[in-house]
Image 1 (cartoon, rainbow, N blue to C red):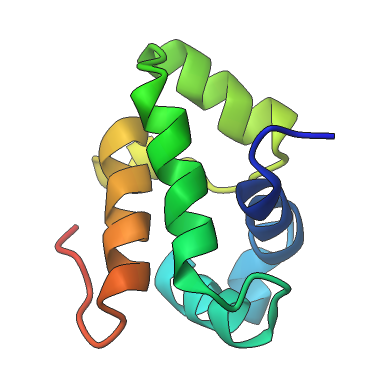
Image 2: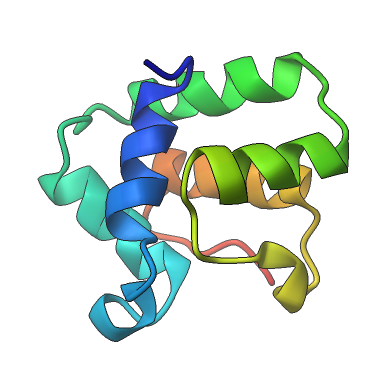
Length: 103
C-alpha cells in the first residue's frame, strides 16, 4: 500500500495513459476526481501533497515517484513546471477550485 493513497488513486485513475482523451488537462481531471473520487474531501488530497513535499525529495525522486510508482502519465516539465511546483499548484487548486493556477 502506498504512503500517499489519494495521490495514488488520482494519478493512477484520472491521469492514466488516456487521460487527455477524457479530460483535456490536469485541472479538469482534478475537478472530476474531487467530484467523483473516493476522496471528496479536499483535505485528504492536500494532506498527501503536504506530507510528500515535507519529506523534501529531490526533483528526480519526485519524478520517479509520480511517473513510475504512482503511475501518472503526465509530465509537468513539458509545461515548464517543476514537480514540486506542480504538486503545490494541484493542492492549491483543490483548496480554491474556482481559480486556475498560472502555468
